[in-house]
Amino acid sequence: MTVVRYGSRFLKSKTMKIVLIILSALFVYLGTYAQSRIVNGLLLDRDLSPTPYIHIYINDSVEVGITDAKGKFEITIPVGVDSLTFRGVGFEPLLARLIPGCNRVEAIMVLAGSYDFISSAKVDRQRHRYFNKTNKLYPVAVQKGLFASTPPCYKAIFQPFASKKK
Image (cartoon, rainbow, N blue to C red):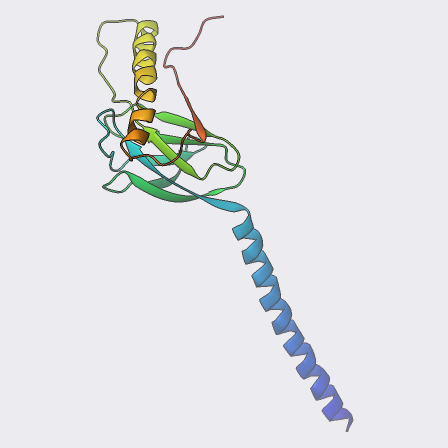
């Protein structure tokens, strides 16, 4: 009779261990899922055409996604991430600072140029001028029905090449 009790305790103990392992795995999964968010969007060029195969980075070094042939993307990022960097061949890098709760990034990429025989400060002035002109196209994209969110839930940040002297 004591053998049966011992066996039933062992069975309960083993069952309990399995249940605890399953519950622990479930809580770890839910905790991980709760600490990330999905961000989607669309990237266009200055002609309001899709920009395919633009790489998307967090912390300027960890690639988290790439746009498809239609310029659309959907990525999963940690909750604490507040900016995304978009880089592609033929385009200037775009740094988008996300506003809390921002889950959709619709942006217009600035075409890259070649700057020969001019100073880096002049290059940055010219790049900044193109950057400002391109950002003014956002309402046009909304009016044409290409972008859905008005106003954008991110802030595009200009990144100069030249370092400022102190």
